[in-house]
Length: 145
Image (tube, rainbow, N blue to C red; front, side):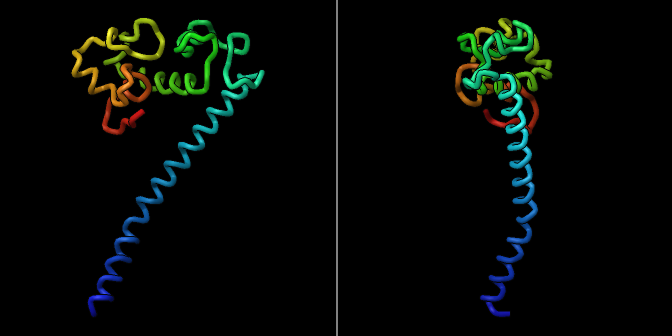
């Protein structure tokens, strides 16, 4: 074999070897997109007046959960607040963080954090000054917010 054929064969082998990884990433992206679409559809059902948020009159749950989701305290739950609340609830299974959210707003501030400043900064992966969503999850597979 000449050098050109060896190079072509090596490139083809690399391409074939990487195909399953690329397909898995594509499938993960599809699953995530489906999950987001389902959550948006569910949110839209609650947003009966179609203003892009759910107010107390539209809310079917209890006041405590509404207040937990309405993190900016404007009397409405936006899609972003709903998504953050959903992510936070998924992260609440982690016993290390249970009980730190003193005001039940779905986020852990530095004042609520029981550790030192450095450990708070390590967990605050997006640098927004609060721990929320996936930041309160443990394990190797944590996504960045």
